[in-house]
Length: 213
Ligand SMILES: Cc1cc2nc3c(=O)[nH]c(=O)nc-3n(C[C@H](O)[C@H](O)[C@H](O)COP(=O)(O)O)c2cc1C
Image 1 (cartoon, protein in one colour):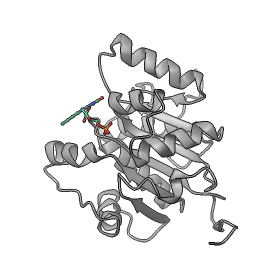
Image 2 (spheres, rainbow, N blue to C red):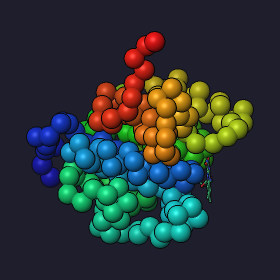
Image 3 (tube, helix red, strand yellow):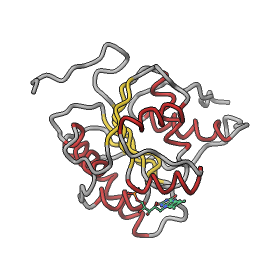
């Protein structure tokens, strides 16, 4: 095995991990992927086991389980056929690159993030690849951005989110703003995605930012 991790020549040095869970609103994940690929980022994607069921329930679409087919699936969903680099991982593959701190990344975004995954990361379970990758970001002091999607929050949810914030994660709830005069669902979603990527200093989404009065 090589001792150096290749960096690419595009706008990023190391890959970004995109975690997707079985929370409602997979459009958040699709829009995030679309903008990152269009901007030529390298993405390591892992979707939890429950994501398959939620795709089926919300979109009536069967998501493939094999990584090779998943790449095509996600690219079709995002509408980006060639730009960027996309590496998909099996949800249970805890031997994948992103399960190790020695594999360098710029951090990880989990969007949308279920309360189940919030609880498991907050308690260090690492019971699948997504949870392990998130655990690795925290132990390595890298950026972990969590976009929780649930309402209302119970006291348990709030305590788990507080634990993650105390451990260094950024919590960016899927709550859009209204000051940019949104006209479409994409306008609302893209605002949340842009604020999420702001936490990683990634600015690749043409949203209208507040300019003052
Ligand atoms: C259609 C559908 C929508 C769901 N939406 C949410 C949600 O918005 N937030 C949440 O925390 N759980 C939601 N769930 C429940 C999670 O999918 C469930 O807790 C699952 O175990 C999460 O697993 P994961 O975190 O490993 O993806 C939803 C389930 C279904 C079937």
